[in-house]
Image 1: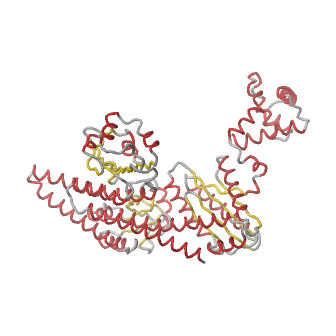
Image 2: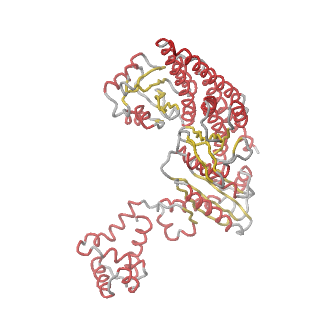
Image 3: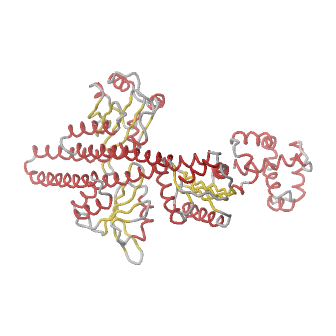
Length: 604
C-alpha cells in the first residue's frame, strides 16, 4: 500500500513539473506576441527559450539571409558581440545542417559536439570561441524555425557546465515553442515590411490598414485560444471556440484514437484512416477529394509536433478558405499541438511508471513481493502466464516510432479484454501481459497478436514484429516467461523479419540467439571456405545446400538442379573429397547440416 501511495505521489509530482513547464511555455507565447518589432520579438524569443529550457546557459537565433545564402545571428544571450560575426553557410556544421535538413539536434557530450563541428570554417570557430569565456561546449540543442512549409532560421541553446544537461523533454518543449516563435517572427517581419512600404508608397495606406487589421485579428485570435489553454479548458473547448470564430465548419481528427471533435459524425469519418496515411508524412495543408458513394471535398491541415504526426484539422468543402478561416487555423494549430502534447506527457509518465513497476515484478524472486507488485499493476496472479513483446522498426526517428507504438497500442486495446491483463508502450515497444487459471485462452491470445501485427504490416511502412511466450507460472518466476518472449523477438530481429514468432517455434535456433553474426560467419567460412575457393567447381556449394535441404534425396536434388543423378553423385563425392568429410559419418554430416541451417537462418 505504501508503494502504491509513493507511486501516486511521484506521479503527481511529475504532473506538477510538466504543468509548470507548460505554464512557462504558454507565458512565453504571450510574451513573444506582445510586440511587432522584429528586434524586440527576437530578443523576447531567445530569453523565453532560456526560461523554458532552464539548464541552458546561453543561446542565439540565426535567420536565413537570401543575399549571402548564410545563417546570420539576429539575437543572443550569454555571448559577447563577437558572436555577430559567426555566419555559417547552409549545411555547415551543426546549425547549418539543422537548417538544411529541417531536423532537430540534441547532443549531450563535448566530444560528439566537436565531432559534428569538424566542417566548421576556422574563422567561424574562432568567432564562436571568442564570444564566450567558457573552455568548451558540453551540451547543445538546436531546432529549425519554420513558418508553414518555409524554413526561416535556427534556434540554438548551449550548456557550458555539464554534459547531458539538456534532455528529450527540453527538446519537445523547444520544438513546440519554435513553431509559435516562427509565427511571431513572421508577424514581426510582415509588420516591418508593411511599415517600409508605407514610407515608400503612399497609395499603400489602404493595404497597411487591412494588414494591421489582419494582425489585430491574428493577435486577438491567438490571445483567446491561449487563454483557454492556460485555463486548462481542454482540446474540445478550443475546437468549439475555433468553430465560433470561423465561417466554415471545422473538425479535429485525432491520429491515435481515430475520433473527431466535435464528436457528431462528419461525412469523411469512414475515410479517416486513408487521410491519416496520406498526411502522416506531410507538413503542409492541401485540398483533397474523397470518393465513396458520394464525393466529399475537404481542406486538410496536418497537426504535428516536430516529426510526430498528431492528427488533422479538417474543413468540409472545396471552396477556398477565407482569410479569417486561415488565420483561425494557423493560430489554433500550435495551441492544439501543445494541448495534445500535454495529454501525451501525462500518458507517457503513466506508462513509464507502469514499465518500471512491471520490471520490478519480473525481477523479484520473492513470492510475497511479487504478489504486492502484481496488485499494484492491477493483476491477480494465476498459474498460466502469457507475454507478447511487440517492436516497431523502420526508417524513422524515435519520436515517430513512439507515436506509432501508441497508435498500435490503441488498436490492440480495442481487441483485448482488460480483465487481468497489462498493456502498455515504452519507447518503440509494446508489452502485453496476462495471467489466467488455465491454457484455454492461449489460442485467442495468439490470434489477437497475429491478426493485429498482420494488419499493421499491411497498412504501414514501419515494420512490426512480436515475440510470444506462454507457460505455467510459479510465484516469483515471472521473468522466465518474459525472457522467452524477448528471445523470440530477438530471433525475428536477427533474421530481419517482421511478423509473429512463438518461443516454442524457435527450435534449435535458440542455442545461437546470443552468438553475433561475425562469430556465425566465421564458423561458416571455416566449414565451407574450401568450396568457395574452388573456382573450377563453383556449383558445388549450391549443390551441397540443395542436397541438405532435400534431406539427402538424390532424386529431388537432381530434379531441382536440373542435372543427371550420376552428375549429382559425382559432385557429392567431390564435395566430400574437398571438405575431407564422409557424409555417412554422423558427426561429419551433422557439421555440414548445421552449417547450412545457420546460413539460411542467420546470414542469407
